[in-house]
Length: 449
Image 1 (cartoon, helix red, strand yellow):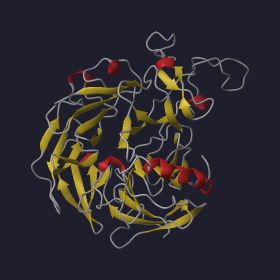
Image 2: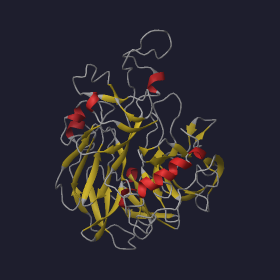
Image 3: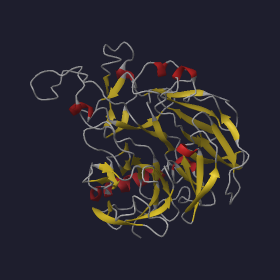
Image 4: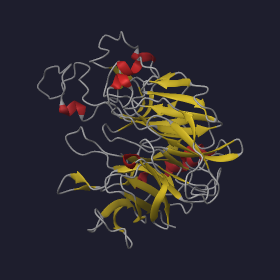
């Protein structure tokens, strides 16, 4: 990844690219303007310059200093930025601001959505089935909060100042979860992610496994994205795209109809060709080798098209010659001879992100001129990777090269993370809120004035 001081030219270009199509949502997921985001269609005179990385102490006010902030913590941010604990929410996942400017945070592990005011979190909705993604949208002249549960999507009418959810309506039910008979209680990526635009609800149904054929023939298809009528009940179901193992952070690029997602790719990939991975002069084709698994396949940032096929589980992104517009290798286990899928016809991957970094949130920022992507971090690599927040500047050709925005979240002595980023939300003052499901915190990252 490039150093932060090198992104000025790309950031300026991407500011123009993000706003050149006219008005649009200033943040991801169509959050209402004037409440927790910059005004819709706003365009800065120049994109924000990200300075060189520097070590910054994390500040925590009264009542916010439980572990991991019971000891002094520092993070790495661009010079001039500050970091503070905004709130404590146990196992915090996805976030959105209400039209009144309050922060909502999902807690799948507790079946709750919490609302944060003045640093204090209280219950907004309870008794839910592993709620995950949260999206506000205007439907029929009214404001609605859409909540993605493990087996359904529910919408709640919202009136300015509401502190509790009420009058929930099921928009989609029967989504696969651990109760689906054929899965026998096993579902590796049961949490759902959503987006809403122009009366359509977009739902990511992630894979149940690392790599398997069963998800490609199920009904509904898994490792896929569907659309529904946002005002109906199971109405207008349409299979939008397939071959997307675990799409997270669904977001429309401001001012466009482009749906972008980040994707968590597969693990333990076998070497697909005759390369010599360990340097012993022999082919390692078909072997599982940590040196290869550490690098392949990359995670993904992709623009989703109607009818698109993005490879999984039969084709894996080929990042041998770079990380943009990636072609594919055939998966050695499931598509060795190419009979299951023609990888040459799969949609190229717009941007490859480092393998096993587990990108979750995706938030477009017109002020920064690009996309903010929290990376949850690895479990299947020989050393910890991810555990950071990156910024992807936008160019006339699409996503540029990622740069670190927030890092320094792994304890050097223990070799373990003390914070795992999940989602990002843009506050009206220009700061970025980052949720953390390990330490149970919301961090506020504030750029220089």
